[in-house]
Image (cartoon, rainbow, N blue to C red; front, side, top):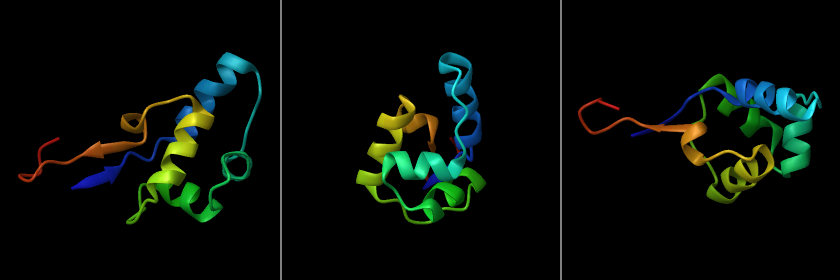
Amino acid sequence: MIKTKGTLTVLLGRRQISTGERWSLRYLAQTADVPKDLVYRLDAGTARYIDLQALARLCDTLECSIGDILIWDGPNGNA
């Protein structure tokens, strides 16, 4: 099972440290051209469906990998 980590706020914080720009989750959604509801659900760790193209745009915008946003919870509940 794939789960969200709920770390978009942390990734935005890292981005702020490296660039000096402070982004909100809403601005991230707008910049990455993804639905803001998806961004909020990913940050809360409650997303059930994730469009792979939207995920790729988020990763490109945040300059991160998919593993920074999602975790694999193996078939036995082990990561």
